[in-house]
Image (cartoon, rainbow, N blue to C red; front, side, top):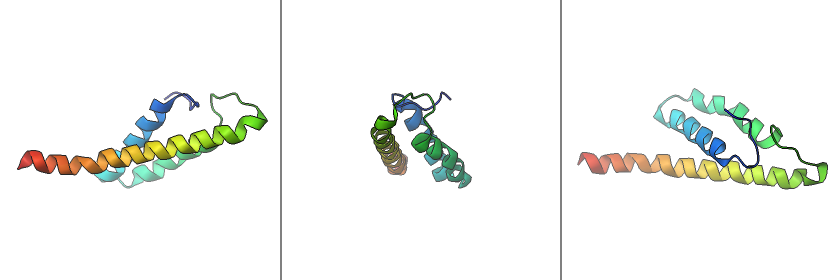
Length: 89
């Protein structure tokens, strides 16, 4: 995977979906493996080059992005079982 940057929204959404899918499908250790990803996403600059005064804004953007991707992943994965039940009937 590419390093985390402020412009790479797909990386965050993709990883969040994979960790959530693994946890919901039945492998609880997927959430434990998500911890390093979350730490990197929220606290490590990775590919971003920002000045010290912009650090607070950068951090707010990263928190907002991770939370929104988590919400999207949970909504997508929670809606799947109800769709399966409708197609089986």
